[in-house]
Image 1 (cartoon, helix red, strand yellow):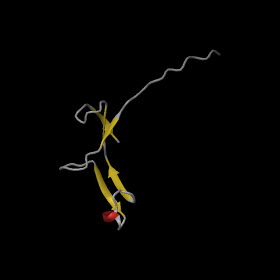
Image 2: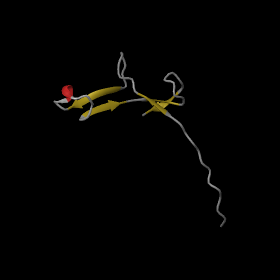
Image 3: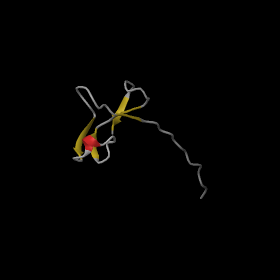
Image 4: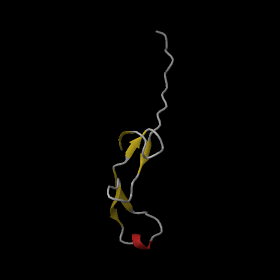
Length: 66
């Protein structure tokens, strides 16, 4: 049994969060009571339905959602 050389594929995909506007893809669903006093979003849970594109530009071809 001879070993075959492995084939490698390098796939690059880009995720895009839209956090404002009429159709956001990331929304805050839970946050700690002290979040308004914090400079970070620590203790915050977001729900995301991001566009998955084949180029870094948000208007490039969509290949799925993540």
